[in-house]
Length: 487
Ligand code: C2O
Ligand code: CU
Ligand code: CU
Image 1: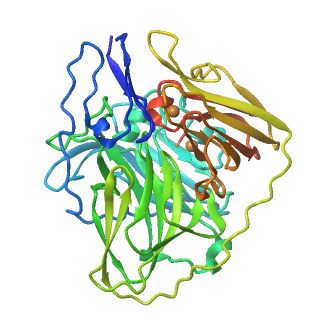
Image 2 (image 1 turned 180 degrees about the vertical axis):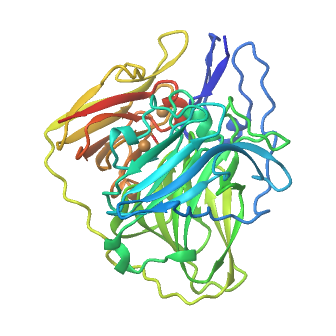
Image 3 (image 1 turned 30 degrees about the vertical axis):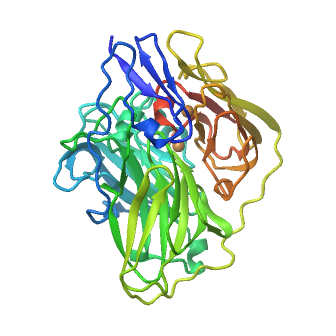
């Protein structure tokens, strides 16, 4: 039997619990400090692996901007793109080679830029020796185009997904979603940005072009030779920013728009700047009604924050450091030149769509079931079963879901992601609402012992879609469930 171990810890605040398949023991430890995380854990009987084989000094290399994909075909009806899913040798750390699984050769796949009202097709060629599939996270798409965990692209096969882009401008992303393997595949590099530009937002005058930069944060554990360590996620302290560990990025003394994505498998960043000002202008599903001044932004796995950072007035030579509360500095902006700035940060951005009246209430309980020898991740007491429909929802209706994290004793953080549609956060218990909950969301934090109430409207499409904890080590072993939208 293959020994399989997972860490069920929600970022930095939760206690760390190591679960292992085939080993009776569960190790718990109160991880109240970073130091606690630095200790190697091992299942009973196993030799604990050395902690932190490679710890990379920050700011050695420049942050790349992921390439924007060029269409291979443009017709009257759609733009088509092609992406090759293949292994690649990357240089996450200067001088070391990291073997990764990639979309077209990059740690961050090519950025696909769609436009509201104009459909996109993306053809994926699977050149891996294993199955893959691609989910458009945040996309409002037909069930056959959603990258359902059981709907795979076999090795050597090609698959075209159709994305209608009948939704607002937003920062979406795409990643592997093969059931059971999505955690490993995504960890090893299968992620990229999908941005939707919206003609309705054009006149706002937000920063564009080279002043609009998507930034993907993931954390990995690297061996001394640069290879990715997969399996015991106890010390993923190397934060990879657009494919480089803790890089720097030269900027002009002007406004920038940064679309920040936490694509990390399992963890939460709380990001702040050591100087200068940041405004949040959007969240998962698009723009907020107005910019919100933030001193820090908290993002759990899968969440996005659309930020404007203003470097105007900072002297050339100034460095501005973006740090995570737990992992320390992750990115340094170096103000290196001046540039004219005709962009705006308007007082008003875009009103949110009205909330239709809800006609149904449901409860979703997330937890690990510790009653058996091997802890099982469950939603409403059941592990994911692709042959079971957990919720049947009438198309066009609006529902309120209360999502509970019942792992009070174990202190395990979870989060919650819904496919097909964005929702609004109505309220929380056990932890206050913050601007991190504002706007159209598709992924939210659910700290241990708390709950969050969401309101979602299920329009347009019928069929089976999943919802799950987006800590992929949890969803990949069953903290996932299925809804069926019916006519
Ligand atoms: Cu980002 Cu179901 O996933
Ligand atoms: Cu998704
Ligand atoms: Cu979880």
